[in-house]
Length: 261
Image 1 (tube, helix red, strand yellow):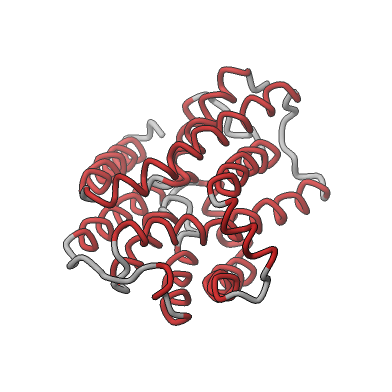
Image 2: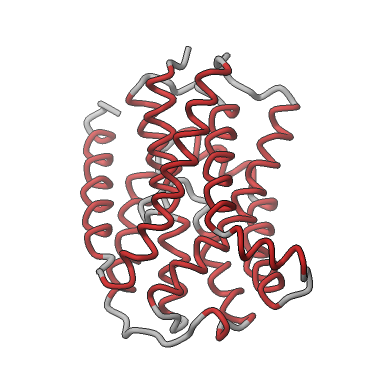
């Protein structure tokens, strides 16, 4: 059974890596295997995503309050347009993505691909667009990159930041919009996972106290990661993250090749 310490560590991993451009799903897969929790189950994943959803709602509380007061605002429609590609791809290929996520056979290569995108995008000239300058075309293209992050070790935040930089958003706005766009994606994942839970796919039994530890740690470290990353990207390079996921990707491939993973 999942211990409180394991839940704490996995919650920290989920919270940080959901918003750092290094892939939360890939890191959670590695974390579960490290603890021998391959069958920790859908319930744990769902609750950890609830934690990061709480974090992003807390950070963007002013934006969501404004959208509730004015549901037909431009920002509302930007988020809808940006979410459409992930919804379409996710529903069409749900079974396929679930299969490769369970086996983890491709995550080494996916870490390498994430690093390549981060490295190339970091060399782009600084953009000029602020939040008020984002077009529906920008949102659709950034959302299309988000859809590619359905692969387990392709970083959602990484690819959306990359796409935003290529669409000439300035670096701070690129991170800001990326994390805001994550909200419907994370919420959608929680809803789909909840339906699967109702259908009996919970996995192994997990105590309520361990789940609460996981949710709280995921929420706290998710909030910290959002705030830190927006400030970091304003002045710093993405290349350290690219190097990190390259090292991790090659390590995973090595251990897979030698049969130790």
